[in-house]
Amino acid sequence: MAAENIKLNFKDFKSDQEVRWCAGCGDHAILNTVHKAMATVGKPREKYVLISGIGCSSRFPYYMNTYGFHTIHGRALAISSGAKSANPDLSVWVVTGDGDGLAIGGNHFIHAIRRNLDLNVLLFNNEIYGLTKGQYSPTTKEGKITKSSPYGTIEHPFNPGELVLGSNGHFFARSIDVNMKLSHDIMVEAEGFKGTSIIEILQNCVIFADKTHSWYTDKAEKLDRQLVLKHGEKMIYGKNNDKGIMLDGMDLKAVTIGENGVTEDDILVHDAHMESPFLHWMLINMKGPDFPIALGVIRAVKGTVYEEKMEKQIEEQKAISKIHSMNDLLNSGATWTV
Image (cartoon, rainbow, N blue to C red; front, side, top):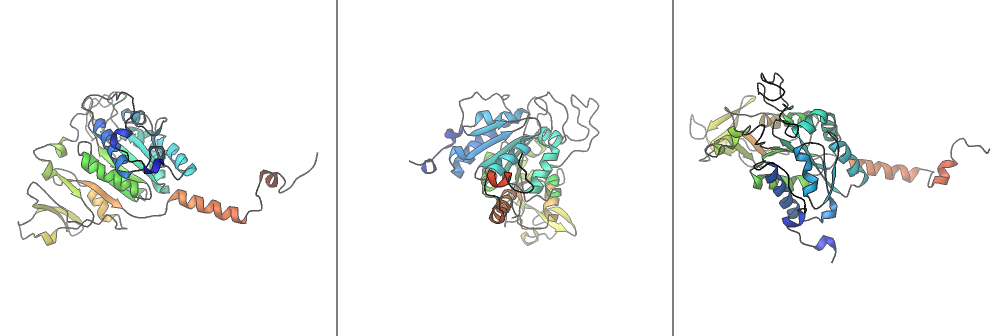
């Protein structure tokens, strides 16, 4: 039976290696979600390759029963770009963290997005350097006391979604480690999207930044603090589904349906396919306590894909080239006999 016809389940994607993350680390939930998402997609294991840099999240390839490559600090996207360009038939998944991907790897991050290679990038954002024991990262909140900012960091943090839009990104989504169903659905959609898919996953580091996302994940309040976006559906949220987002002039406004004359007709409909990033930018920047955090696929806009353009260019040049072999090359141009 051909490998393509074998029905796989999530257990088939688990490796035989012991998972060495701290108990309670959000990485465990993300790993299980990736296993399930790949089984849902239905591709054979040899079509997948997981590529990581350095950090707690970068142990990921060892725990996958697929091809994998644990690379060097900040360079996962550079190596992934090479892998995808060399073999466009591969499904290339990049696993990185807010330190690995946005600090030493920040240059590769923005240029991979700019080129729009067909990659799935899982950006674990716990707002701390975990593997090296608790230094602040590019996404750490201003004022946060860490091992490298004992009086509170004075740096303004990155918002990963803003970097994606600023790099002319085509796909950006956001999830939370404990919301495995949402993460699963996003990953499956990202795999079907042609282009660089950036999935920011708010992940908890129980040792050095425990509860850093607790405002949004608090069990009693999360329904009032999370807006799960779905393309073509109203931006409605809340415990009673009575809260929503509307446009107030050039700004977004969080409202309660039924109060101050607000009706469901006033609530915005999410359009992830909108070419203009204007509304996507505002959704990406929503934060508490005035707004819920936007989760789900925020932007998914079609664009030309790097490796497809590269393959097309190669074929065009081969068709008109007079060089068809190494002998042709060595005897072309100015030559002489010794």
